Length: 103
Image 1 (cartoon, rainbow, N blue to C red):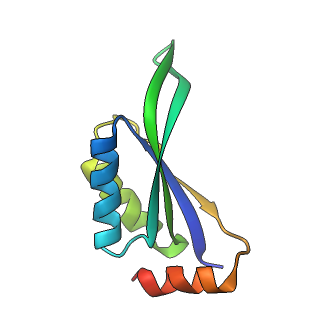
Image 2: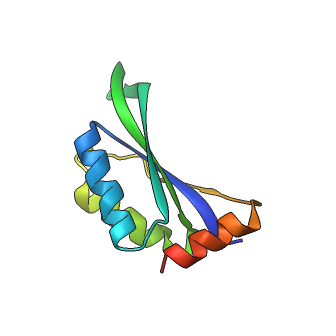
């Protein structure tokens, strides 16, 4: 299956909304959910704790390179999280909807 979820995090809702809108407008994502989270992570030897917004991007694995390029072009982080999780199965009509929405 070509369907996947891609994840990235943003420092604030403004950047998250900008990236989400951009991906949907370019038909690289059928849907992007913005989810507030608190992240605890190691960065340059320090343990950091930050409020962030996770973007849950519904798309196709074949579009990952384009999505990654778009996120990097609009992101402020030096090393943004950009990962892909395959969807191995799902409601057929939902997966068809993703197909209809993305290029």
